[in-house]
Image (cartoon, rainbow, N blue to C red; front, side, top):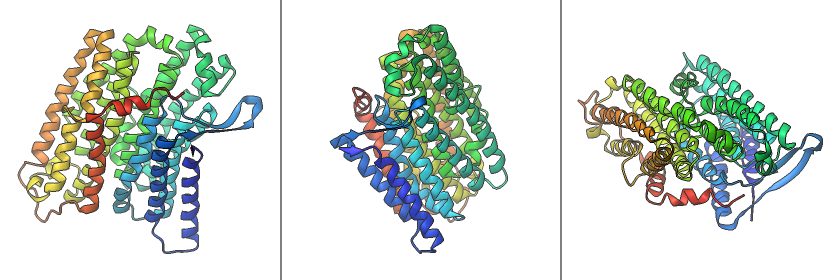
Length: 469
């Protein structure tokens, strides 16, 4: 059995090692310390899949039911998979990108890493909220201190204001659940939530929607997203899009789908409508973008909206599709933003007009770029296709007009193909271009392998989220 506490202990040891390395002026590279921590955590995760996980529960403040409880609930494993793997695949990007205050950056990196994993294994809502906040605050510092020198601070503050509103709404949800169940334990609330009056479930759903629509994000509570994604360093953008947004998905599944399904059932037509509005609106907005990073930032919202639609349908197919699409989106959007950051380092700008003809000079990068774009478009055999199909199948069974969301997918196909044409096959914009190296190729191969694996064997992800309570 693998103790879940290990997911906290290893990053904590890494943080101490980074501090000692800095204060004693040792010569060990920070990336090596973080790499060892992440490699150990990945080994623990896959060891736990084979041998099983063992939780822990220690009462801290028994009068209010606050305990240090770690466990595996029915949704944890798919989210843990992306939280464990993606920061490891992202480490080389951080190594290339971060040059100043590296020790502080990697301390924040490990705090984010440990906090994101711990949210998914917290079995007490107070503990979950603490880790939720730790992840938000560490990413605020990453955006503000290592983001764009002109816009990073302002974008970081906008991000913090919106995410704190999201956190306050989540706190309201937690307190309402406690008021009507008398417990902060996830297991106890799951057993008692059906006794909560329907009117109170509607109130919980309202606050939950504020949390989810900011965190994922969804229209119209997405105003923080474009600036934060664009201003953050590539490392920060990937953490925001691949992982932080999934906290909203997790909260919606855990609280909405599992704890207050009666409220979701009565409101699901409206909720599906919110998702469809986001898909159509963002598809149109993304079409006008000439900045490659901003284009992928907006288009990322389309897939978060599809996930929202799948959960809101309250069907097994929709929920399964949402989980598959969650994992798929995390790996694909990580590829797209890493490649976009690489293109920016070559061209000096995110503007598509400053790029062109890279297929001839950077064949390896071009292959992965085309692969990632085809994957996000939902080409059969790759991971997004299965998730999209299940989401729309589930939504159609509830609201046939939900298929109108496919118009957004068709619109997005146009600008994805346009991006390939302009960046890869356009006229060569500059000379002396250097292709990606061996480590960058390995990085892309790792992420690509998961995209293919989930596309071919989606049941691996679906089966992870069942029968684990």
